[in-house]
Length: 98
Image 1 (cartoon, rainbow, N blue to C red):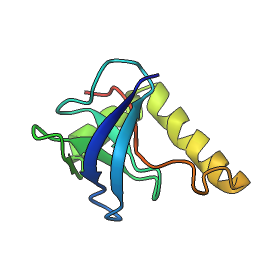
Image 2 (image 1 turned 90 degrees about the vertical axis):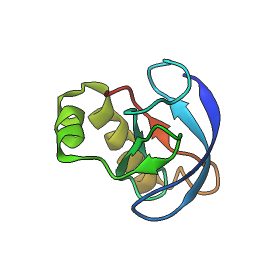
Image 3 (image 1 turned 60 degrees about the horizontal axis):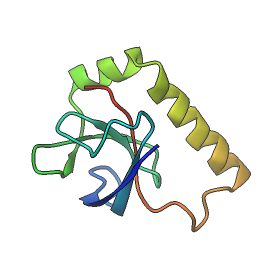
Image 4 (image 1 turned 180 degrees about the horizontal axis):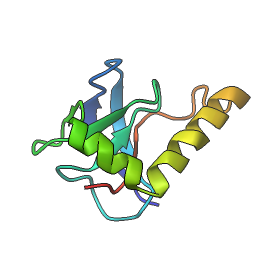
């Protein structure tokens, strides 16, 4: 799993992120890569300028067919429930659904 510096803002909760981690080790985020905000848990999509935008309905449908991304969200929910995220996570987690 690689971690990359970013300068993004969640389009849902407006949290600033300074890094992204890939669960599939595919290199730096690119256009169409999905990202989960570590603060609010909602999905966003990297655009062509390395920013984040709300995903389209088609992108959300692809997300549902990806084996790893729903597991990532479940892990986030479990970490929140345990209180494991306080102060330690500063960036979105990124999957590979394109």
